[in-house]
Image (cartoon, rainbow, N blue to C red; front, side, top):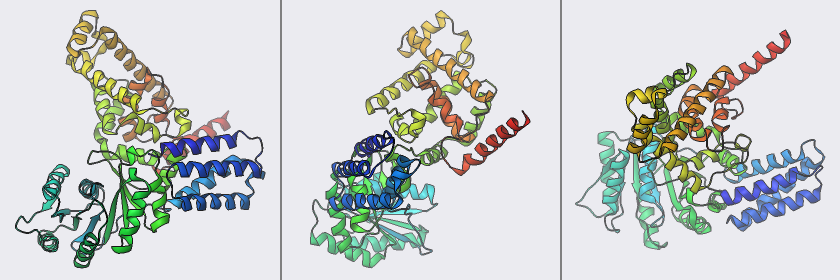
Length: 499
């Protein structure tokens, strides 16, 4: 997401860095480029105009062209304004002691309401320890209620059904009573949508809201419809009073105009973004992290959270211990690849890393798909080995390699290439261990990423990335690795003093 805007903004700000001394003319030229970039990203015209004027007034007020690092000051101002534009801080769903807390999901037909209802309920159960009950009051669309039942089953959440009734108000009353009796603390209401906004839809939503008194009314919009999504949100807000927005298909929207405009236009924050088809492909919307991604600063905090949520800490620590003792086998390597796959595509992970770590290198979706294909082939090769061969690669002679190649549908050259990558990864781990870098980012993250990245990328054109993932101190200011970084710096200082 935001690829188009991100590329243009980074290019504009990079041109500023090339100037020996910034003048007001340089800043004016950059602001014109920024304004055009925002408009091309389908940002609301007035929002783009106000954004540029705010950056201009702050730049002039700070007289950035007289500073020692004027380019960095401009980048800081643009970053702060992007964060402010998108709402400043993340807006979590806030619950009360009432049983149940009601969350209404509203929006036009086809925007992704039913899937989003399931995704959000799964997220709330896993991250806010809620016990959701889902109910569909879409009595108009064929099989709509059955669809929610399928989604609820897929995300492991309960669904309320009353096949005897086709009245939305009767359904929500029954669901609320069932939630109170059984002890579900959150009732997620998947409401009916229309192909266009009509008065009957709004009247029905107003009645459901009056009946259930929801703590949240979330408007679901397809991000790829751009300003149409913003205009629809405006109308829903005027009639129903929404409290937040869920933008779906953000992974397919290279522009991001809706996400950048909606807070300023309707005054309500984006609370979640859908970033894929899987039921765990939903993220809380963090304006500061999104601004970092847009400006090429990476999003290491989200990456760390992804690792912590999807990788077993016990298994990661076991593998890390093997790395430090140089006992990391092909069996362990295969387990690393399995963990790595849980984190998503390579292109997604690369976007979360700061540009200084990747050297500005980006991976296209095609290249990312190629990496995924290579990982599957690697797993097939290792699966074709015996337990002895996986635990001691040195026994793989010519005849054994021939058998492995045949069993995995690969060539002897591909088997040899895998073994070279594996050896390179082992050497890299040994070097990192000698340099005290293992654990710099935290045992859990290191165990989950370093091996997989090191092995996959060690022979594929980016040999430094796996090592950099382990260095930790350059990855950001997250508290989890800050103390380790500070202590290592202090040790170096004491060492210099003794010399």
